Amino acid sequence: MKISIARRQVSLNSIVVGGLFFLVTGLIFFIYSVDFSPLILVALLLIYAKFLRKIEKLPSYLDLAILSAIAVVVSLLTTATFKISGYGIPVIGFVILITLLFDDLELSLLFSIFVAFLGASVDGGNFNVGMSLFAGSLAAAILSFRVRRRFQIIRAGILAGLVQFLVAFIIERDLSFFIASAMDLNLLKICFVNGALSAGIALTFLPIFEYVFKVVTNVSLLELSDFNHPLLRRLILEAPGTYQHSLVVANLSEAAAESIGSNSLLARVGAYYHDIGKMEKPNYFVENLIGYKDVHKDLKPSMSKLIIINHVKEGVDLAKKYRLNPKIIDFITQHHGRTLVYYFYHRAKELEPEAEHEEEYRYPGPRACNKEAAIVGLADTIEAQSRTLEEPTPSRIEEMVKDVVKKRFMEGELDESDLTLKDLEKITQSFIRVLNAIFHTRVNYPREEA
Ligand SMILES: [Fe+2]
Ligand SMILES: [Fe+2]
Image (cartoon, rainbow, N blue to C red):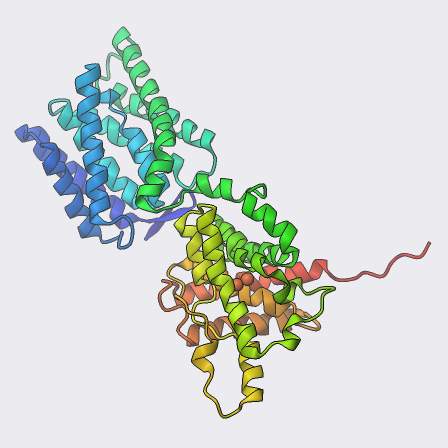
């Protein structure tokens, strides 16, 4: 069974297992007053992560160990330096960072358990501190999941601080004395400042952690989607046809990613940048040919093929020059996978029917390594083919989309992308819907005579 939290499906199993894990270990901790040293906590976290096996790609065990060690050091330092109780440890910021960096609520749940134990342990085995930190961290994870703007992170931190206070307020007192005291006000102040400060710390360190863990967060993606980015401005001016093509690919990819619950903003931004390499020789690409002569007419197919394939390499060079995040560079290298430069392959075949050209006329790869890159690759071909449809009726569009997806699947291009057949069906339907909407708006209605 799955439940939906913040537009994300989380397996109920892992929440139940996580909750049980927390309660049982907490109970042992409480009854026997076991002192959980930070090292034991780290080990517990890693074992539990391994047990769940939910996080195969990111983060690695080394990343987990680094993150846990940072949390331990920060917790020990804050309590020792500022002489505050466990309630003031800025673990909410830590969980916000994990949520933004790794985009996985289950992983955030694990870290919430971890920081709860850590806080309780640092505060001399205070179970109440553990419970309230756990509630605050979990709230922070849910509230900061897939947020795109900085103020949403600050809001998540403050609200999580309030949740932390509420839980502490309830469990710290005998319920018959439900009157606010000076101690409660002090607690409220600590939790509120902790929440706000945590969010601030998370925001400050986000770019550094993005670099270290080689990930890209929605906050950075939104900045990259701004058309004032120097690379996108150049694309608009130097290769306007490619820019238009990239916009349609972005719309197709975003909707498709949304339909299967993968990262739609990543797919959109990846599509914006996938063909930047074409800026080096824009006139050699069909979408920029309007008004120009066909430059390929005087070239050998092998030469044309070289220029076409080279847009991938040139794209990577440009991306590195402008310091684009490696996650975006993946879209540049993977959007053609190992597919064939079909048009020039056939021209070569016409000229020399006997020769074996196929391998020479393939893109070097690699194939798409994640769902979003595979979607952009599919949308790229579908957009190009849609422009060749003479009469784009709904049935022709459907036939073309199904054909492209089937062919890509049969060629093994989607093998490393983690896409399931169910995903492919949803993606296909989404492409058909968006293309129909695009072509519907392009219908020429007869002009009204005055
Ligand atoms: Fe391309
Ligand atoms: Fe493209």
